[in-house]
Length: 92
Image (cartoon, rainbow, N blue to C red; front, side, top):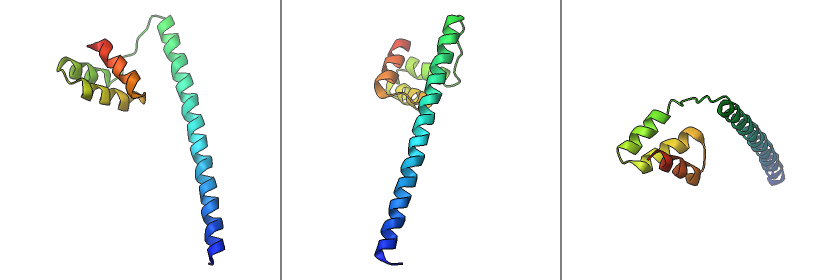
C-alpha cells in the first residue's frame, strides 16, 4: 500500500468512529430523557425507588467519607461533579 491508501483508510476509519460516537451520544441523551420522565412519574405517584448503590453512598456519608461518596454517586449515576456533590451534601 502506498501513502495515499493509508491516508484514505485512516480518513475512513476516523469518519466511522465519529459516526459511532455520534450514535452513542444520541442514545445516551434519549436514555437520560426517559429516565427523567420516569423519575417525574414516580414522584407524581409518590413513589420512590431506592437504588442499590444508595445504601453505600449513605454509609460513606455517615462515616464522614464524602469524597468517596461523591465518587460512588458519580459512577452509579453518570452525573457531573457538582450534581453529585449537591446530592451527597443533601444526605449529610
